[in-house]
Image (cartoon, rainbow, N blue to C red; front, side, top):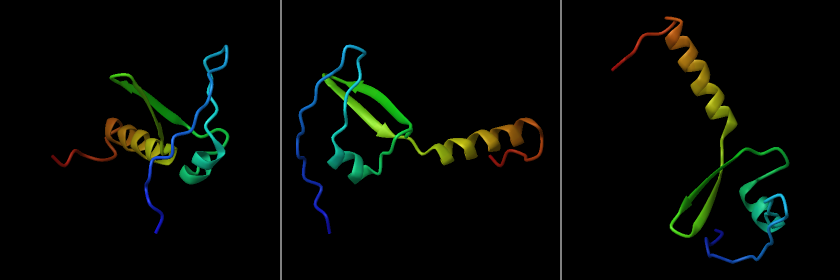
Amino acid sequence: MEENICKTEITKISSKGQIVIPLRIRNQLKIDEGSVMAIDTTNEMIILKKVDVDLIKQFKNSLADLKAGRVKRVA
C-alpha cells in the first residue's frame, strides 16, 4: 500500500503563468496532456484538482433530460 506522504517538489512559473507539474505527481494522479483541472485558492495556497470529465458530461446530460421533461424530479 502506497503511503500518502507529502514530498514537496519545486517548479517555476513561466511568463505566461504556466507551471510544470512534476512527472512523479502526473503519474501518481494519472494526469495526461489534455486533462481538465480545477483551480482554487485558500489562504496562501493554490489547489489543483483533476476533474472527472465523464462525470461532468453525465451531469449535463441529466440536466438536459430534466429540462426536456424526459425525467421528473425525485425530491
